[in-house]
Image (cartoon, rainbow, N blue to C red; front, side):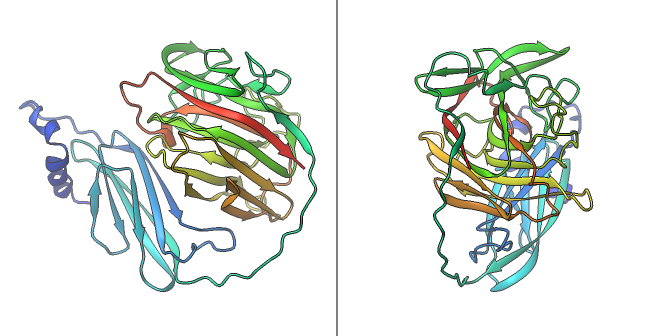
Length: 381
């Protein structure tokens, strides 16, 4: 994007910045760490080009960015302060398109990223299928029908930051095992993020929260977590699993199942929610290809408009042939469990509430606290 165009847009969208500036030259600041997530609506492992609607949703975040711009294929550049943008491609059939995303600072400096996507527009012919009823057994659960600290026979607090005392993805919090940050009351687990100065491992942060690991690892099954998400901007709640062979600093299992690291261990994001979008939830898979070692990821998102007002059930169905993530039994994304993926090893459950970072985004200056509430966790086989 031309710098002159950026400055023209800033003169409209950020007049207050220009009017308050001094006569001295302004130091140029360039945005960094641009993260772009493109979701093809209705995409699955069997329908990677989408559900025929032709719609894509783009989310972007960069440090020191005050505005964004999006261009879909050869269309007009759409400038906005929003970190999200939707677009519908109207050409019938499956076609490849480019999506360009720009992030720019108050001084007009910019960075950009270009992605290619294949999108299907049209009608999908679905075949009827009959699902067999399968009898299952509850193999792990916590109904949180007690008071005080989370059950220490079931949950481990991960408090050691594996990234030199901090956490990955640019997160701004320390995780603690204090009851100020995680406790059970009135039938639910509360994970509470607080704005406070807190030091750990020689690193000082301005926020605290909690990250719980299940002390139970399992291969295949159905995971159900009934939860209500925090409404505050800047919060990044997550319900997810990691391969127990990750051997991450401070996790519960250590080297008990091996030490392959991430992404070779495999990650399943049953639910994540962006800090600037409290309508949609994300389902995503991250892994290292078992043949090549290359990092790969796939996923999608779905609208859950009442996610911060009501409890919803976030589900993973995982077996030797596929993995499905659902919300209230509505499919969000399905991935085939083929031999080039590491999803044949034990996983454990993580519940956490991060602050800021790639998916948390900007934290408002008036933030004080936020609560991620879990009614129950159940695993069936």
